[in-house]
Length: 148
Image (cartoon, rainbow, N blue to C red; front, side, top):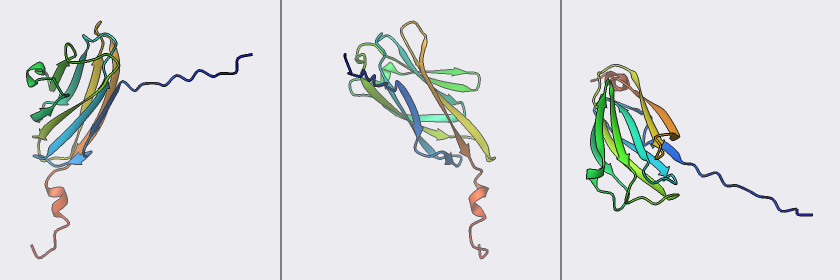
């Protein structure tokens, strides 16, 4: 009788995080996307930002040039596209950092950031989303001493 147990370790294919979940207009946000390259290397990573965010820079995996990234504007979204071709290995984890500035109105609002990992067949392999809150500048002025 075989008493061995097969334990399958689930590999997390996609995760999305930011350095702060609340900010003010004009602040710089660091958006981190960690993904595992699918078996079909011709997949694609999409990071979907609200159009009120302006991208300052990217930090891409080693060996991937900035020319590989393309930006697409669609309605109220800014989509960062990173095709996984020559410089990616199947099953390997990679991290992409996007530095984006929040250029929005001076009112309290929520912004949605999404990330999608697509396989060679354009089938969704993973999806993550998160929400940040943007406070108006006047929100923190209430804590200044009355002398001002």
